[in-house]
Image 1 (cartoon, helix red, strand yellow):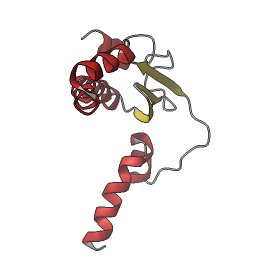
Image 2 (cartoon, rainbow, N blue to C red):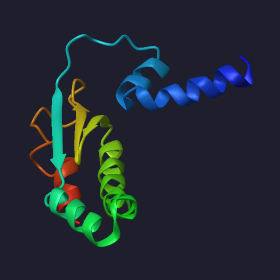
Image 3 (cartoon, rainbow, N blue to C red):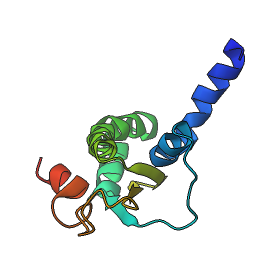
Length: 126
């Protein structure tokens, strides 16, 4: 492989969910049916924060400050998500949709990812 093709592959991996990348790296077949949990997290007060920062700082600087405020929240959530083998599916405005695969019974089949602490519980406890 050339340096260019390796660089392209590295860039494209950002668009492949973590659990898929792992399965592909292990030459595992991906099942069309999976078990797991979906995590939807929305930042409370985001619209109000955005409006106030825009009024106080102007549109451009207000938008930059919004990112300064919310990026640490996403970074912490995504770090916990990845710790549990989860993947970010997409962002919708200030919300994030995530997937935690449990097809291997990693959470004991008891819904641990969403109910008994898991990503959200550990993140919310901060």
